Length: 239
Image (cartoon, rainbow, N blue to C red; front, top):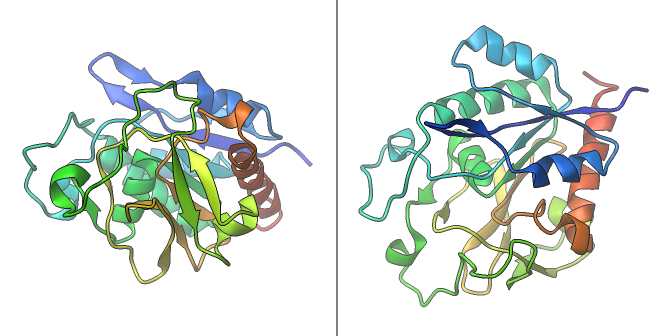
C-alpha cells in the first residue's frame, strides 16, 4: 500500500504563502507524505485538492476573521489572513464529506470548530472573566509550558494514554462552545478550551497547542502525529 498523503495548509500574507518546516518535519518522521496546499477560492480546485490527499492538516497562523462567526472585530483582534478562512472552510467541508482524517492545530482547531458551527473568543484575556494563565509563552517553541487536562474516553485520551499532559502555548484566541456533534476533550487548568473533536467522524481533532513544535522532544506530540497518519492510512481502504 502506498504511503498516505497529508495535505498541509499554509500561512497567508502579503509576502505570499509560508509554512514553518516543523509541520513538514513531523509528517516526514511518520509514514505520511507531506503535500503543501496552495490557497484557491475555486470550489472545483478545492475539491480536486481534497481528492489528491488522504488527510488534512490545518496549521496555525494569525487571527480568524470575526465576520465568519457573525461578530464585529474586537479591539484586541490581531492580524487576519484575507481569503484563508474561506479557503480552509471549503477544505474542511470537502474533507469531512470525503471522510478523511482532519487535524487542526491552534488556528486550525478554531477554524475547524467555527466551520462546524461552534463559537470562539476573539481575545481570551478580555472576554473570559477569570484570572487566566499565560497562553502565549515567552519560552522556546519546544518548551512544555503548562498542563492540559484530557477527558477520559475521548479520542485524545485514546491517542496519548494520558489524562494530563504538558504542552506549549502560543495563542490569545480560543474555542468557546462546540457544535452538538463535537466535544471539548481537553482544557487547561484555568478552563480555556485546549482540544475539540468530532463524535461522528473517525478522526477529526483540533488542538490549541503546537505538537509539531514539540514532536522531537515529547512523546504525546509524537503519538498525535503517528495516530493521525495511521488514521489516514486506514481511511485509504474506504475512500
